Length: 111
View (tube, rainbow, N blue to C red):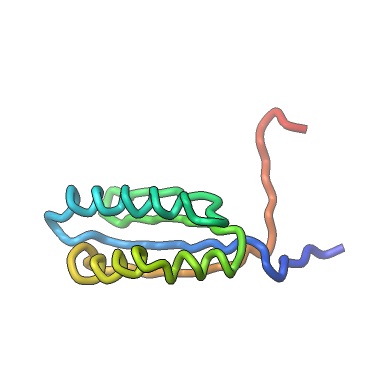
C-alpha cells in the first residue's frame, strides 16, 4: 500500500542564509536566545544547523504540526528577530516550509 502524508503531521522549515560581514558575534548571541525560546514552544521537535565553507548556512527546524509551526512563526519575539535579521544580520536568506511525504530511517545494527 502506498504511503500517504499525514494531514497534520510534522512541518519542516529549511532556512538558508548568508550573514553580512562583521555581524557574527552579535548574530550568535541573538540566535542563541531565539533558539532557547523556540525549544520552549509547544510542538518544537528539533533544530539542526550546518555551515558551508563558502558562508552559506542551513538550519532545519521541525515542529509537530502546522498550528504549532504557525504559532512559532507568529510569536512576537520571533517576529522581532525576523525584522532584526532583515535589517542587520542577513545578506540574503531563503525559507522553505515543507510537509514530509514519507519518513524512512536506517541505523546500522538495528533490526
